[in-house]
Length: 129
Image 1 (spheres, one colour):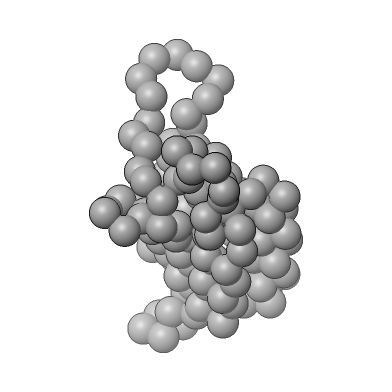
Image 2 (image 1 turned 180 degrees about the horizontal axis):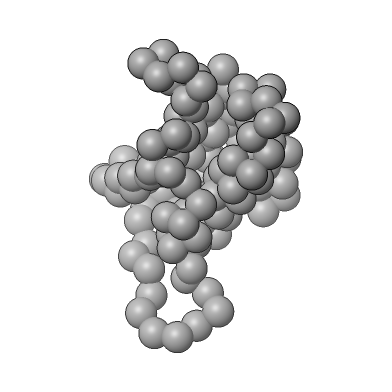
């Protein structure tokens, strides 16, 4: 199991990305390198969203939490969540180079959920779906 809580800043996104990549490498093994890469990128997108958007209305960054564990119900499956206690910011409409994080997560993860609420947002990724 992996559980880390850090300030929601861009500098910490890289730290958590490296931590989840290492954990996934051990959890999924070297034979599933594509899944490790895809899930790492999907987690990174969720972390970047938390760091950039969740606390945009505050002077100080809040926290973001990364949790990863094996799914006891399915051998070889993992569940990863990224959560914050900030405010949800809906994706923007239109053609822009920004706002593609959720679309990337959808493409990269076998299954995912995004749960915004009054106490923050949690993105959960599952492999295999």
